[in-house]
Length: 245
Ligand SMILES: Nc1ncnc2c1ncn2[C@@H]1O[C@H](COP(=O)(O)OP(=O)(O)OP(=O)(O)O)[C@@H](O)[C@H]1O
Ligand SMILES: [Mg+2]
Image 1: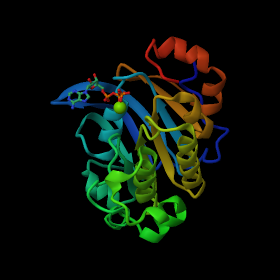
Image 2 (image 1 turned 60 degrees about the vertical axis):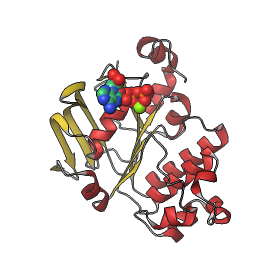
Image 3 (image 1 turned 120 degrees about the vertical axis):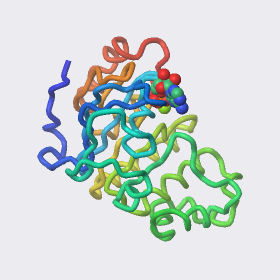
Image 4 (image 1 turned 180 degrees about the horizontal axis):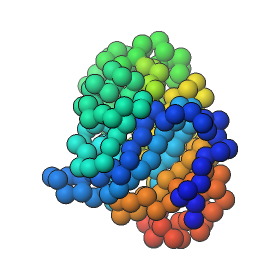
């Protein structure tokens, strides 16, 4: 397949990666479940990591964000090797939308935005849907509204890189489209977006490049256009029975 295919058809081809992993190993209690993963994200592109349950997608993302220690290999941030913890990386321009929705249920929508890394007004410009909900407790929002809140909060800081894990999990197609469009717009403003998804088709619709992870290793890499074209074949080869795509 096309592990060596360069992303020549993306707008960001030729720019230096803002986030890069080389031979990354990662896991829990010093036992790796992700091995020798190499990937990169460039300014202006959406890169999606696909793969079945348990493939190591979340583990990879948590390690890139600094929430889990790396067990081998190298992570480079804006060209420099880094092992800084998550909160430093947020100050340096890293945005994260974690797998578990990260809103604080007891706080209002406005207070959730206030404690975020960027201006409240910017979050509301990006997601005007949140404006009428500002006084509502975040715990009373629908799943889609909560995910818009998490995403608005992360994007309001105009991060250089956004890491998002299963943004679309359990949400209606209309909301998923809304969220994907917001990520596309952020990438078009210059952010690098690394998105983990199980639902391949919609993510590939907005992505520039894709990596497929299986049992902790990259088994396929290429452009999103190639992945869309060969999706049936790719799913048959790498996803087993449990794909929701
Ligand atoms: N906190 C943990 N402690 C120990 N092992 C874990 C922990 N979290 C995940 N694992 C294991 O690590 C492996 C990779 O899991 P990971 O959550 O990264 O997969 P994933 O691709 O994100 O899966 P999913 O699609 O279900 O979210 C799995 O075998 C999983 O059981
Ligand atoms: Mg996961």
